[in-house]
Image (cartoon, rainbow, N blue to C red; front, side):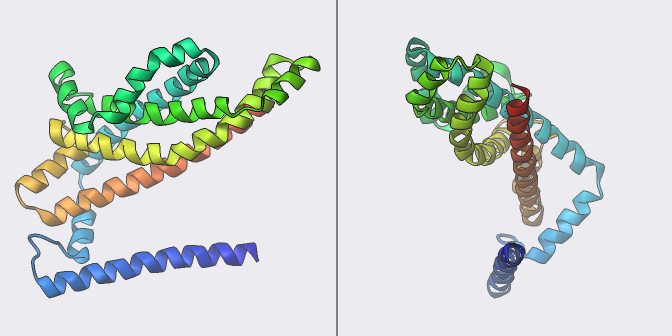
Length: 255
C-alpha cells in the first residue's frame, strides 16, 4: 500500500509538471512573442545544445563550487557557533546585531558592498554564506532552547557521559529544528549566489551566462540556463540532505 502511494505521488508530480509545460506551450502559441517568452521546445533544444559544449560545464562547475563552498562554510560555522551561543547567553547577545543585519539587509546591498570590498571572484560564496548562516544558526538556537531541562538533569543524576548526552539529547533535539530550515537555506543560497554572479558579472559562472543571454535578448538561452540552475539546486538539495542525515546517524553511533 505504501509503495502504491509513493508511485501515485510521483505520478501526480510528473503530471503536474507536464500540465504546466503544456500551458507554457499554449501561451507561447497564443502570444507568438518568442523574444519575450521562448517556447518549451526551443528552451529544451537550447539546453541540449549547451550540454554538448564544454563552456556549459565550466560555468556550471564554477557556480557549483563557489555556492557549495559558501553553503558548507555557513552550515558548519552556524552549527558550531549556534551551539556555543545557545549555551552562553553573552555570546548570543553579542552576535544578535550581526545576525539581524544578515537577515534584514537586502541581498543586493550585500552584493554591492562585497563587490566594492573584495571584487567579484568569490562574491557568490560570500553571499551564500551570509544568506545561509542566520537560517541554520537560528535553527540551532531554537533547538537548544527547546531541549527538555528535565532530560539534562536526569542525565546528570545518572552520570551519563557528556558524549552520550550530546548523542541522545542534544543532537536528537536540535536536528529537527535545523532540518526545518535546511531546505529553505539550500534553495536561498542558490538564488542569492546566482544573483551575485549576475550583478558582479563573475567569469566562468552561470550568472555570467544569464547576464549575456539577457544582454543579447537570447530568451531561449536565458530560460535554458535558468532551468539548469533549478536542476543543480534540486540535485544539491537532495544530495546534501542525504549526506546530513547520514552524518547525524554516524555521530549517534560514534559518540
